[in-house]
Amino acid sequence: MALIKGLQTTWKILWRILLFYLAWAVLLAFLFVPFGSKVGAWYKTNPVETRLYGDIVTIVTMLTATWLALKFIDRRAFKTIGFASGNIIKDLFTGVVIGSVWLCASLGIAWIFGWAVPVYPAGFSWNILLISAVSMLLNVAAQELLLCGFIFQTIRNRSNVTIAIIISAALFAGYHLGAFKGEWLPAVNVFAAGVFFCIAYLITNNLWLPVAIHFSWDVLLGPVFGITESGRSNLGGGWKMFTVNGPKLLTGGPFGMEGGLIVTITTAITIIFILIFYRQKIEKLL
Image (cartoon, rainbow, N blue to C red):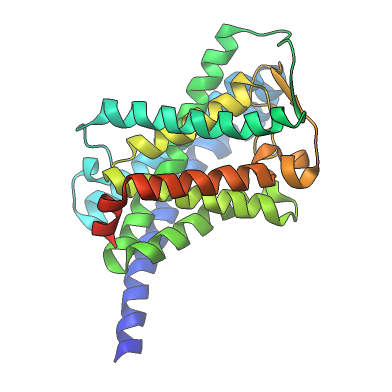
């Protein structure tokens, strides 16, 4: 009986997730495929604007797929996905502080050991930084919807929180699989970050906190400081405020700092701090 019940639960979760992915894939194909060659040519001359277009398409299709899943599968209001307006300012501010401290602590450790060196940001442009930041915000919002949105909530509601966190964090790492290039530590770090963002979502039952944490980390690391992020070194305007050169195991090598042991340590410490600080809220969820 337990096996049959488990299979039934798995099927109820699986078909909902598959329909969500199908809806998202169809929407992406509709907005990307017809313009594939034009977007490729545009990227060569206007890379920042092209990424902005890609991120706009991604967030629009993600929001639409989520809306469809909530309306026709779960039959619940769209704001229940994590867009309730209560405490939005507090959650966003808290997230920016946590994400900034997390990133600055990681970079600070590398700086103390002489592996991160400040440099003059030649070619810096506020306009390009603004466009890159908006693009990054849209990208992060889409990632958090994919990580903590319909899929996570479907698993949590029909199974339990722990399984939802593990599966969602594993999928989050899977989305970055192409950037790992066979390296194991970047995968561990991205999985840990996924766990962290899921916990941040659970604390408030809203997406504002994980979006703000994720955005502040990404926008500082890539567009602002010009440091390689998840294997990509072209997320800003071409300037650098820091150069990072150190032991690959610690500083991440070609993947960037997110693939190094320094970030493993700071992520673990940040998760532990969050678990302690929000212990009572988290205990109610388990």
